[in-house]
Length: 421
Image 1 (cartoon, rainbow, N blue to C red):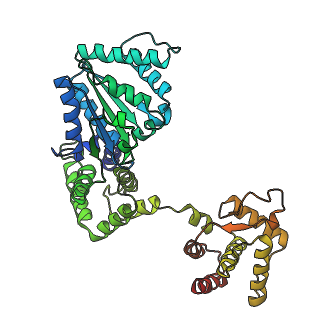
Image 2 (image 1 turned 180 degrees about the vertical axis):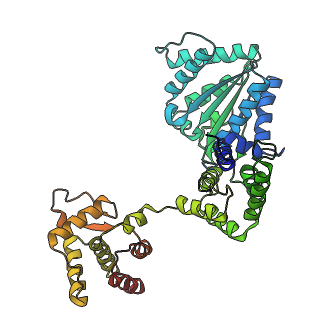
Image 3 (image 1 turned 60 degrees about the vertical axis):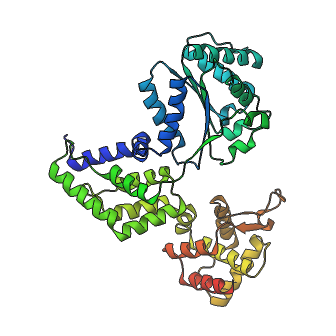
């Protein structure tokens, strides 16, 4: 069955949003971008047969790895037989012996050599030094990528020292690239290691407002020279420009970016937005973006509260009331006394047997809306173990509003509790 223009457009947009290289190539157009700087550092090492080291620093989701991969892809196409890439991750290879063995294994695999699992740290060190020399003589640059770089800075740092020290040789030709979320990662290094580092650092930040506007328009626009009907493309792009200039949309973006402004978060947001596009019209609307924000900002506790039984809501309100009364330590028995006091004062119809209340209490523990204060008294009966509530007064208040079964008396009780607190 032939795809409609809307379906074809959706496939195009989704594939674009799932390709970080396509996205970061848009952000890397400037000559002052981290892409340009990183490409210059690595390419100068290849062209001038010199050693380099650089740290890529910034929060997760800002594109450190994506930009590096974009640079490597371009350089591998430009210098197909002059680059060898070795990848390590601090989460897997923070142990010096393990890391050096992994470097030796990858070098053996790339140069079709026999790898020995029984080789010692010193044997592997000599092998790596020898490979650096041989690759240098063959004008081949080895690029060492150390992801989670700060984890390599733990312990004696023998790997970093051996690697950087070997690069002091005139014959070696290598680049060490450290990737870390810690902005002070270089300060974790020993003095002997730091002295061999070039101290180049590239800081990756969330995109600026101008970059964001450019990114949204480029990523969400449909190409005019595609197989899509020209009239549909023109209508879609015109509507998109109206949305991007709309104040409600700008407010939506502000709400989203106030919590997380990384490129990863933006791409997730845009993917959710285009996925809810009206397939009959095939045109995006502000509502699509609003729905995406709601999905991204889902609050699991509120979801649980929305489905709680009336009895469970009573128990939670009772616990909040006990907290307001400065009764910091309470248990199931204390909650039941408060529950009975509410029933006696207001003659509520929602009064349940103790056994039923205990089951509801246990279910709240399973849902992690409440928990035991500590592990002491593990063998003690559940009625006597101190508990605490894991949701704020605001969350409980919102949950009561969302729950369609919630009695009006509980709303009034929470209002009174809020005033007292």
